[in-house]
Image (cartoon, rainbow, N blue to C red; front, side):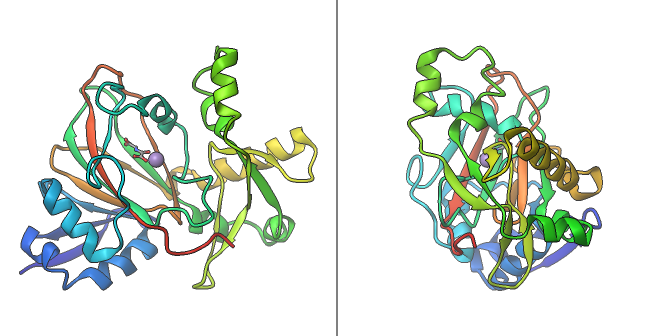
Length: 270
Ligand code: OGA
Ligand code: MN
């Protein structure tokens, strides 16, 4: 029975050293949930959980979404393993998961199974800190401002020579408006943007684009980012409501495979 938590960087990321039985027993679940919200990303180095254990651990901290095979979604660029893998190419851009949802996933638990020899590091940026650090005038200027999120926006930066069919496919997903600032039930605020953020509602296109880029650059400054260098067996949880994430590019034929369990959303964007 052991459980210790150490900050990895001042503004994001905590490493948890615990044995499997302690984690699966659930006695630290409340503490883990609090740490997740405060620290954005939690790392369990080389914990080596198999699928059943990862699912059981996830169930101690939230409700598991029935995604992939019995709750295990294989994150890979191999379309033979994961038919939706083409969309996963967009994971190299800063994003949060579930841009089309009113209540996006609480978070995801990713475990490293097969790594790429090159690239494949996952990065996380703290969007609570990104909001907190803004000058007061900027906070006032973006309060109540909404932005449109689109599938096309998540994909067009990747598929720069997309065919008309691909573009038509992206456009089947209706745009979704969200505030640029998420005011959480806790009273804390975070920035809500990423690769899905296409334009700012009611603002000139270029002006809106410049604002989105400015805020995204601000919330992904190096001091707000933790980069995870994977070892096989590592497990990482991120707070999908308070961090952006992206993966460093890796070859599609690298075999890189991460097993992901996603936690049901708990809070509507407001
Ligand atoms: C995801 C994701 C990043 C990675 O699974 O939602 O963005 O490192 N993954 O594979
Ligand atoms: Mn993602």
